[in-house]
Image 1: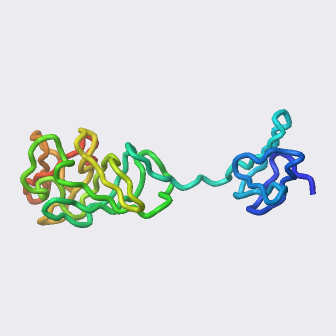
Image 2: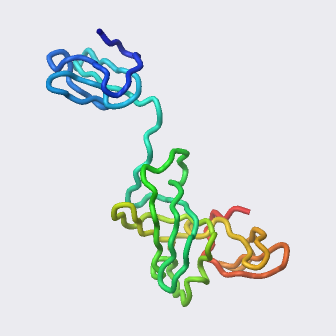
Image 3: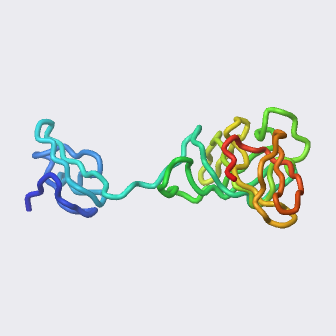
Length: 189
């Protein structure tokens, strides 16, 4: 079977032999036979004698140091907040792995922070920068102005909080309770 550019192929489909083409992205060499490693469209480069496959679906995101991510605070301890990382900021694609994030109290802000509960509460949606990755666990940093809490609820009545004129302070529009958070410049009302 002869393949042509634009043909739709599945993983394992025959694309050619190594005497015809060099295996490119989305392909693999199986004892001299070039096969597709992904679901997508064939690209034949006749000038460079290379066959590749372009994915038809977006590949999942693998996080790297420096990426901005968002997630929900699941636990706040004395020195560390735990986050269920939900995605990479600005991307619609899913993460390749379910990441568990953590923010140490020293990585929250540039100023002194006495209690971590003055920055985060369980249920807050935060945005942070990846500072270290170890397997499925990542360490986050929220020292930059565009990092921190982007959405929070009142701990008394569960109404969404709104920013005040004070730095790192939110207020409940329903009950009037003021709460401290490490508020991002991207806070969403």
